[in-house]
Length: 227
Image 1 (cartoon, one colour):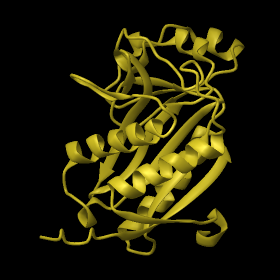
Image 2 (cartoon, one colour; image 1 turned 30 degrees about the vertical axis):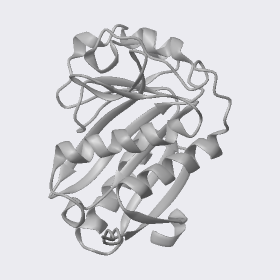
Image 3 (cartoon, rainbow, N blue to C red; image 1 turned 90 degrees about the vertical axis):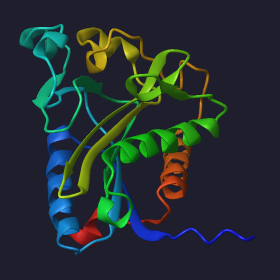
Image 4 (cartoon, one colour; image 1 turned 60 degrees about the vertical axis):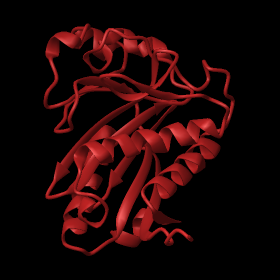
């Protein structure tokens, strides 16, 4: 018996390059409002941030291991965030993804959303020979007990924001300033794992992973088209 065809929804992929965390947040808030109003389809933003540490709404300041002065001298800014999760670092060499998805058109299930995002990243890493997976009781994507991608989301009226951060060529020394996601567990990167794929190659693999797992037809688009 033939399986029924998978239903696909239109979605737009936007690679914004390197922008500040504050600017990315403002863009997300605008897109979330437009998505709730039905003015735009689902969006997947790919960005890179300058050095920044963010604290989620359930985070604990004791997981920040450096003073404001130390962060300033290291060139790291700090932002409180309305995403879930604890504390994390973003910076150059990291590929950050912000899905703005209306889950009413997929599944009204927050846990399923996070698990599917993990699977999209796992599938993308698999394209480069990296055998990633999950770690019991811990959100994110892991390789041999080390976290390679962190996840923290916000959902309002079933529309998502925030998302994931994949360590591509990230300088892992910057994680010394925090207890990543509140867990005393090591982090890794694709580069540390021996992968020399370009940012463009990894971003394309992530787009395929999201399109396949969320049953989307992703089309590359420019921010100017929705300004």
